[in-house]
Amino acid sequence: MTNRRSFLRGAAMAAPAALAAPAVLKAQEAIKWRFQTYAGSALGQEVTKPAIDAINAAAQGELEIELYYADQIVPTGELFQALQRGTIDGVHSDDDSMASPTPLRQFGGYFPLATKHALDVPVLFKQYGLAEIWDEEYAKVGVKWLSAAGQDPCNFNTKKEITSLADLEGLRLYTFPTAGEFLSQFGVVPMNIPYEDAQVAVQTGELDGMAWSGITEDYTVGWADVTDYFLTNNISGAWIGSFFVNQQRWADLPEHLKTIVSSAIEASHTYRNQWYWGGEARLRAQGDKLQLRSIPQDEWKVVEDAAVTFWDEMAEQGEVAAKLVQIFRDYKDVTSKAGPPYTFG
Image (cartoon, rainbow, N blue to C red; front, side, top):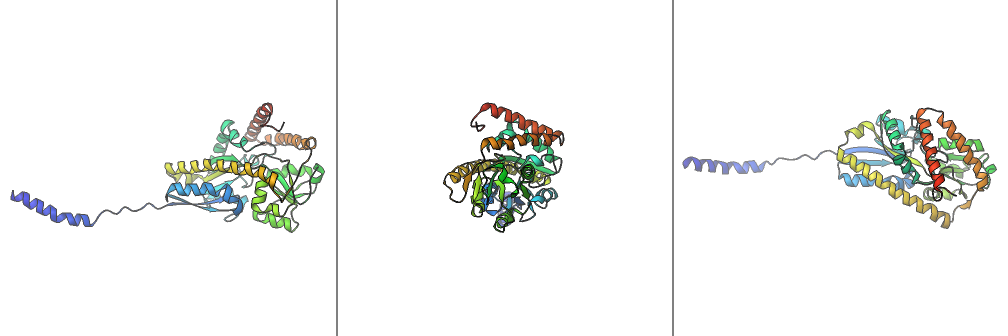
């Protein structure tokens, strides 16, 4: 009994000491990424920031992504190299603008007349096999491709009135590399300048306008303030852009954070689709800064026919290019047989 009392007394005396030094759990240090988008600050609020905000909120401090806009860390044309080196951890861009060293470069951005609507892009990726091709090709060069989506069409907003193909002759336009290559056969002079300089370049007379976006962007970024006309004919119905991450940074990310990143990006596609689709209609119908002009459809058919030849030339660049062109052809065959709203009649 005495031994038992001694034991209990000793335990009671030891208890406060044990409670006085509780174990301290050290919070895990947040994973930090630097992420740059192709878009300038005004446009980036709509096309990239919603995804980044959603990721940061859902990650609850485990992953913190700092968003940078066009050219803030590196020029847009150097985005891929910076991503590959790890100078930046994530990118939202098209393959063409960021000078992708893969056979996919010419097919991102605005591949001439390959799409008519934004929903064509996810269909091509998820139902026609582009997702597998994009994932495989970027894995070869140390970059993780995450997801692609469509956005706005590629129309012309210019200082000069355009009502015929002849009016394209000599136009100095800010546009995408592949789009510029295609348009040069009609006399367009493609200009390669930093994104944020385009508006001032129109004001100073260095540019005659842009073939970069639909009318929603023209109003959002200020281009509608320095140009006068909007051509309803477009050379592509939807931008093909993607989210990319440095391959090692993605591999190091815990699985639950990968799920958060992927889910937020997919959700952001839905937001962009409605923002552009509604904006294109509203600003054409109610916008007061740009006057609408059109080239007659029978004349515009020359451009459509030229796109077929351009596709043939692209297909000759290699096995991957040939496969991609065939996918675009297969999809065009299906939509042309389906009729409106998949085609314009």
